[in-house]
Image (cartoon, rainbow, N blue to C red; front, side, top):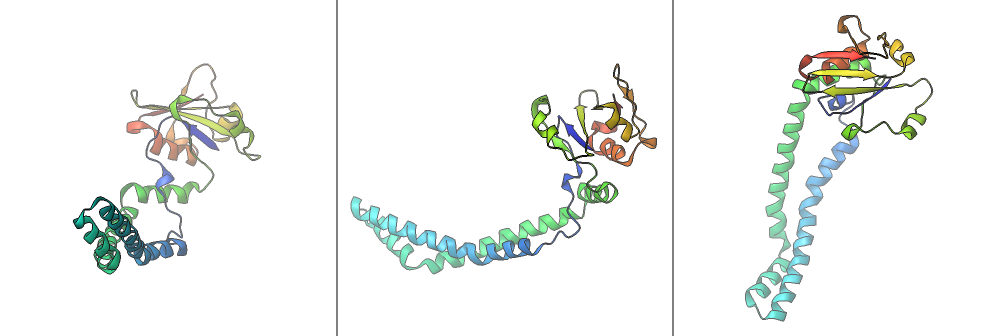
Length: 206
């Protein structure tokens, strides 16, 4: 099942995979701490040469001295920026690991455990129709439903072919939307109701 939706809201996209601490992530974070101060130092050298050249052309002694000093002593810039970079990285990592284990992130992880990859949300902006090319590229056995959310009314509606609705034990009433009872619905429908119905309002299908 691949529902498409017309409005953005909280969703299991916040979930992290079971193996969330990947080697490339650790290498990237460590590489940032180790190399970014040196890169800033190289940039300071280049900027110092440019400043000195500008000062020499314009006759500004202050710019000439400052530029030559920055180009000759990049270590001072590296030491200064190293502390700032490390502080930013540590603060960012602390924020990341705290949010991973609280609130919506935990709920999203639980949703992924219950549903897995059997339901995928694809956002279509500005109430545009689903591109036919996208539907044509869906693998065999995968069907698309459109999830429209009305925040003003606090409702959400699933639209699609009867075959797709019946696979989820949903009513198929082309003439009018039928309310969905979440207690007896498919687990994927329950998760959609939990995440994508504004204010825990009503979910309809047709």
